[in-house]
Image 1 (cartoon, chains in turn cyan, purple):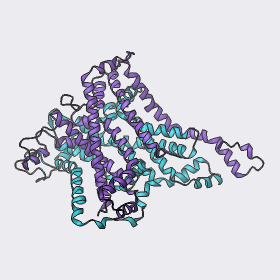
Image 2 (image 1 turned 180 degrees about the vertical axis):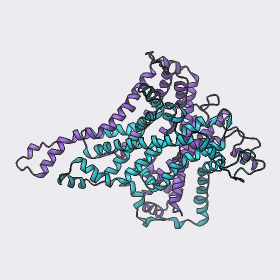
Image 3 (image 1 turned 135 degrees about the vertical axis):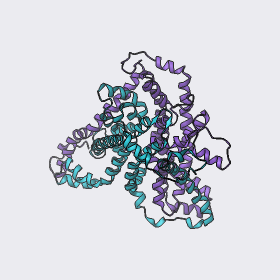
Image 4 (image 1 turned 30 degrees about the vertical axis):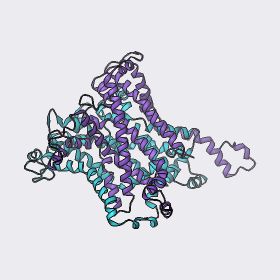
Length: 297
Length: 316
């Protein structure tokens, strides 16, 4: 149950030997570096936001306007993005593709993880290792052969090209994460159910799955975020503007010749980031604990 | 589980029926349960991996299957200065970015491990760069690195530290430093949060005991924190190295490999030759050339993890 360990840790240690440190020392060793880290890590987002609402005049005139602030905020860039480009279509594509590939991967991963972790068929360990290795195969070495396959299968330039290829990195990841969760469910529960005459299917759907809802949620969020962020497959397998996903669309369609629409670009980046940020902020505790749990376990 | 159910026939209890049912059905059930995942992975992962290796030995182009030409692609790459430059760039990028990510990530983790107010708030915002799509944050960096309107140049000039704009992405050395900085920015949160999880499993009592024994702060870190953190550091950094080595998005957005190929990584070169240039065979060969490096990292990870019973996948 290492996944939730960080949360359930007894609070008796809280603070530890912190009282041994004087306040000035803490300011220099803790608060100041932390402040710098936070500023550096958040500045690009601030800059993205401020540029997205800045009129073009202020954006390039650093002599008369302080670039760190905006005097006359405008929604012009966002209006342009939403009504004069294909952006809403890309957003919709990304949502459909991410949702479909997430569901597909979760479904496959639940069965696989349960089989490896609990059915313990002969060779389960080797299969587990293979899944782990599959996670380490990067898209950067698969996209050329996959593009040939996608073309030959007639999937080129369709959402299915992405829905079917994203599981290559989602399934190993979800399986791996869910295996950790299934391991934390006591064997005894399943044995009881077996004795009561439950079938494996009933055990999975009535005992294991309800108990691993937190795991399913975090695996789902991870998978959704990963497919939302995916770039190289979407860049390679999708040609027409109306089928593109947000990251590819913003980069390839909003950047025209040498006139950069920085305001619209930043608005596009901001709106494209919002769904995952919102999703993640709702489940941040799940997210952090499962991410750390997945690595730690 | 090899106990034959016949061996306990004298008393056909519920337990033995259970056993026989298990041993009969487990493999069949396991096969059925593995089927969806295995089918998808075999078709879209294992097969393309093999196809990629095969393509590397052919002269395939987009729209033409290509024929077997032996190791001609590799011979060509061997004498191609741009390819070797991309190998050098990839190694430079991976090594320097990983070292920086590790050092800064560990530092941030140590800070976050202190008893801070708004602890979970800080943990949450620190993760942001990692959550946001790389391409979109890279676009923000592109604007930050703009040759004319770079906010960094402006701020430094206002402070009087430099007297002319920095050409972030136009100059080979600057461009390398800039993409590494952007990669480090994105990678710090992952390293910091995973190491933080590791730090939180170290019992406070060890620090108290060491302090009573007169250990200095550095000694506490060197002889308590570091040894207990090593397994997690090994896992985290293996992942970090793997993902940095195969990075594509950041470079593609910021420089597309330029200026004069100074930031071309193997992945971006493979895309440029294979997809943009249409030379599928050559692109595949470049991608295959990444495999030995990846294998080295994976083997390192495997043996590093084995000491702790291969924790991820299900040590018994």
